Image: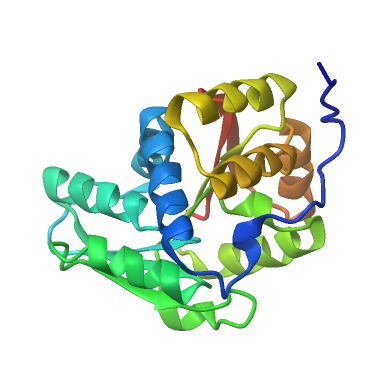
Amino acid sequence: MMLIDTKYRTEAPEIMDDFLLEGEELREALDKIAKINQLLGGNKLTIEGLKKILPKSDTNVEITIVDVGCGNGDMLRKIADFGIKNGYNFKLLGIDANQFTINHAISLSNEYTSISYLCEDIFKMNFATLNSDIIVCTLTLHHFKESDIINILTVFKKNAKRGLVINDLQRSAVAYRLFQLLCLLFQLNTMSRTDGLVSILRGFKKHELVVFSEKLNFKKYNIQWKWAFRYQWIIQNI
């Protein structure tokens, strides 16, 4: 069996990085990714992070949460459910650069009046206009190169009043092999298999996230390893 080298992040592209991609294979991949993320506790990880920086429940205060790289909107729907259950007044916005993905997310979120979506390239956006309290980023940051990550997080930190909740992959040979097993169990299509494995090799080691935090002068942050091979990275601005 071939050894997996995880010392450095790969710069290999993912199929999904094509913003013009569309079709049934993409739809299936988006839904399978969301399902696996849910089963492995990924949604819970982001919700737990939100709890640490949310104010105490007050139905008179509107809290704007922006999900960057929202995919099919599964994370936003979970946040909306959490908000309803706990008495929060959430205004939720999902952003993705692929219009087909956004259309799919809209179709799955018809019952959620608190959620809206926007098809935008985050490198061209004026985040100040969003008036966001919290920015969440789930399984998205690994799609970018280091210089782009620095730029993105600089913008996020400046524009998220309360802070950021980042949930992303640990770069690990064990995670790589386990995902190969998941591919068989869930009968993932070619796009999901290929991109999933590349995603793990584009993931992070904890010390890399610490370096980002120091470079960006984050005053209050916490990085924790969580199952399944994830890092929960919380940056507080308050």
